[in-house]
Image (cartoon, rainbow, N blue to C red; front, side, top):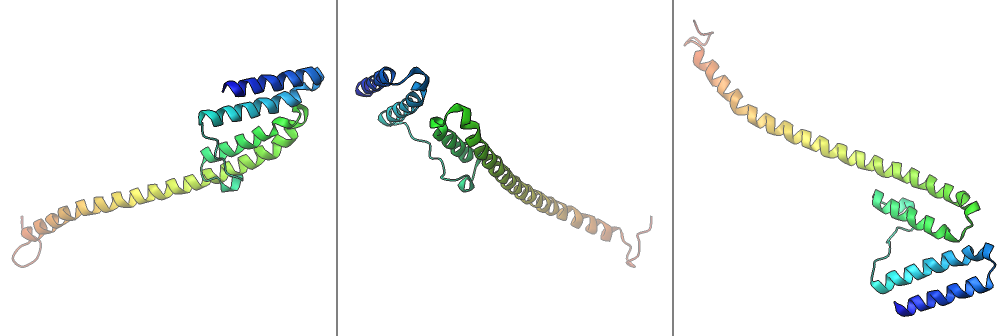
Length: 151
C-alpha cells in the first residue's frame, strides 16, 4: 500500500502542476477512483458483483448494486450534465424495483395461501373427531325405533 500511496501522490502532483485549477477535478476524480479500486484489490475487499443490466436483478439488493455501479460510472461526466445521464438510470431503477416488489408480493401471497390451506387442513382434521363424537352421541340418544329420542 505504500507504493500505491506514493503512486497516488505522484499522479496528484502532476495533475496539480500541469492542469489548470478549474479543470483539475476532471482528472482528480478518476484518479481517486482508481486509487480506491486498487487499494480495495490489494486489501482483498470484494468488488460489487452488480448485474450487467437492471432486468437481470432478482432482488432489491442486486438492483441497488446495479444502480450504484451505473452512477459510479458517471464520475467522469461533468456535474452540470450528470443529471441528464442519471435520469434514465433512475427510471430503469424504479421500473425494475416495481417489478421486483410485484414478484415479492406474488410470492408472499402464494406463501400466505399455502399457510391458509395448511391451517384449513389442520382445522378440518381437528374437527373430524369431534364430528364423529357428535354423530355417536346423536345415535345413542335415538330411540330403539330409530326415531328421535324421547325425553
